[in-house]
Image 1 (cartoon, rainbow, N blue to C red):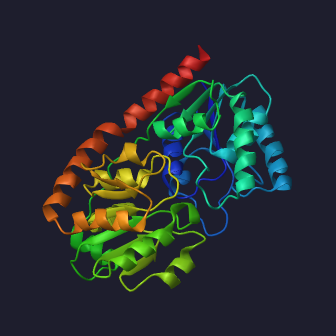
Image 2: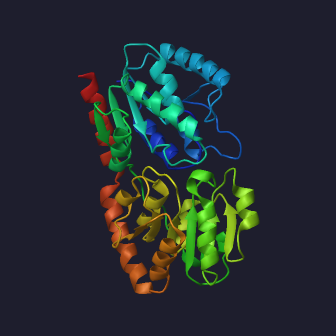
Length: 357
């Protein structure tokens, strides 16, 4: 069973680690990917994976470059002769499912673009129409999170297709001693620390995080990540927000007390799973499958995408060390059960075997 995984780029983040896990667990698997662009960085997991580069492929929509990427990917598929082509994210899914052949086609939605402000309304309409067409050329559609699949089907994408929901498998990160972690993060006091870790780009809505921080001047915030809005966030950040760029996740979650996510759109965010595995409670916006990752009222709070709601939820955790401890312990136990790596790999293996039978 030869599986070719295709993704436009393996930028630092949960999607790259999800795909990396699938590739590294299967000695017959191969990864076809393009290149990161702009201020993004490629995830280190790529260094240990069997990779073939797809010339001209990246996230940005460019008809000429995309056509050249299609030709490059078609050549790779014809050379590799995979039994299954498993695509991830829109660009890779578009190009790979247009390539003809007798191989089986699987596509994973790690989220959707309906709430992504970096795409215009016209672009979203075109992408939705394309996804509806491509669903008819796909043997199995996978959603990383049940709600993501529900929302896609409600929009008419694969409404009559075969769907499977497979949550990400995440390993607990090494724990660093708190004083060492805080020193590495540049935090000099022992106050309650709120951590925000994500790509610093519009879909993660770092500007909402800044508005929250302004309402809580006595609380310290630390922001980790890189992206096209990094310099703007640095310029706008109030004095209680430290913007440190990319940071080691094990150090970051060992040093913070509460995790904050202000995203406009999510699949099932691996960073928030890692936070919970480190016994860090989470406050996040009610988008995508966040409500499947965080059990609101038990492991954190899932609230409306609004400054007041986020501030209120944070205050509950910041003012009570007992609540932070209780939520953190519950988060750690639940995340270990719900997001184990073996379960994710077993579900994919069963999916592939079922297709080939």
